[in-house]
Length: 151
Length: 63
Image (cartoon, rainbow over all chains, first blue to last red; front, side):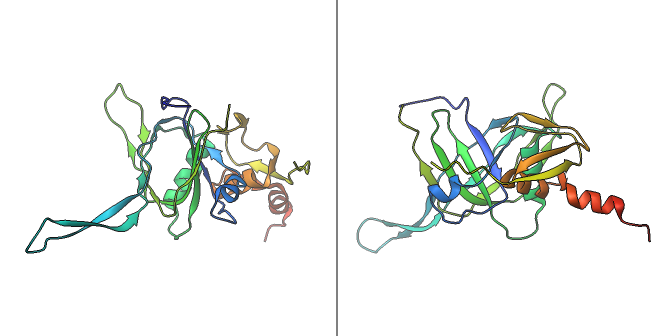
């Protein structure tokens, strides 16, 4: 598939870690979808920029350390949703445990990674808005990309 | 393709909850069979307890 909208995309979490850090390892886990997700946010690594300005010549730019980034979804809070309960558990977890995450796009393409949830603040905004939760999932492993299945 | 059935674990819901993956709803105090993966996820979130554990606690004599 070429371009697609974000509609139908989903976020899922597992408390288990993959036996191998590849598509097969992640796919073997059981995930629980997080319900009522409004936005997923950006996903992808970026590199620090290392610059050097010699006395002669143009500024030199190098790729430094990789940062796998952070996923910052937002969701309408639902106290009965199992996926949100697991998200809250991962946010409250004071250990360095890695949780496994799966993002699925509407065409079936998947993104797997291990991450730590650094918090899930709740927001009560104006009267005509939903109570929302906005976790920050710091991505701690290389993101494993799985293409959409052939149609 | 393997036709091995996944191992199931029986658990009792500690409160009402819904699994958005399967759209199954679980009422508080009801018991159900879960795959090991589901069980691990729900147990970690405090959504259920193992039935054996619950029964053992129930039958444990008062100190």
